[in-house]
Image (cartoon, rainbow, N blue to C red; front, top):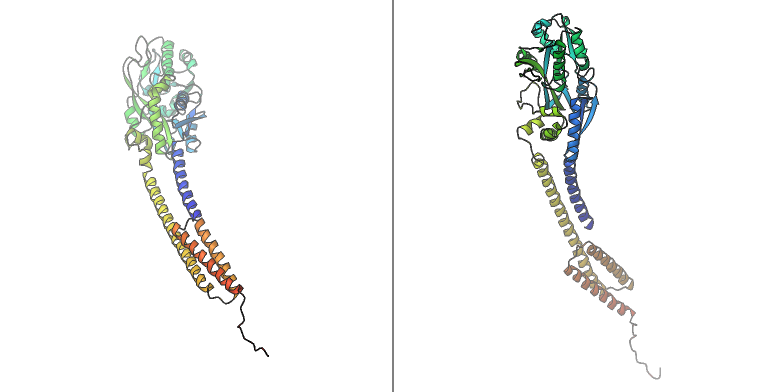
Length: 443
């Protein structure tokens, strides 16, 4: 009986421990690996975000997986070396990657010096275009954006020569006529592209010429990895606004994407934290101000992660909403376990009650038999049996199966057995007197 109770208690404790462990695992911070290019603005943003999350003891932690190119960030996600990656939509969108946030929108800025005759993309045929490198060589990835623009205007891709240029070499390349125009793919107003426009203006001794990609919307319709962007007047500063008027161009987006298998709750929480921490991150990395939520259109060509969608649409589920079915089923299992344990206890008690009835009935029989037994050794057997019955009764009492009334009845029966056996023993120990037979004197 006691062992059964311990088993029931152990089972209940195991269930409670399981629930506690589940809550602990749910509340424990999730460490997410993020693939990001080395020495980029994105690396700086994620480092600031990781520091902010750790300081505020948020349930998300970020760990950077630093790679050399944007294509490598995509591969890291596909090979599951990272849970998230910062990618650019026109470079190498990973298969199975789903958008969490738009880090920024990049515009293709085609700019030529003041004295140039270039006015449209068609004019680039047979010309040399300097492609501005972002930070270090290879950081901009492939030049698919320029290829798409040339194809739109029927300009053979091979007819335009590309020359990779660092920002420091740009002005000299323009002055020495090593390139006819410069292409920078950055967020409008970003320091790098603003400096590039200023260098072209300085080299050309006048207001630079901005070459629009007017059919950007048509290109974006055919290739959803691109998008049409409007560059507004004065986006690049200057006493004379650069550009002097708004113009349309082709662009792409830098995105934080997650593996589709990453949990919705985790992604939703990350989306919330990044958007809420944006002002404090931007205090250290100003370009973080360009972080924005993706479109919640479920039919988008570049899909959004369901966890981000749930947060943005205010459809997130609480812990109990998410696990209510498990909690309900667990409560049912625990209830069935308790009912089964109670039934076993009741059955065990009934069985032990029946054992007690047999002991008591046998003690009464011993009382009756001991009064008429004819042999002394038979009394010894009855006494030994009474001792065994006493041991059985004490074992039942040790498991708390006997009530006070049953114990009293058992004690009374044992006393009567002892008294009956002792009385019969005295009968056998009394010497038998011989019958008196008178004798005649003379015999």
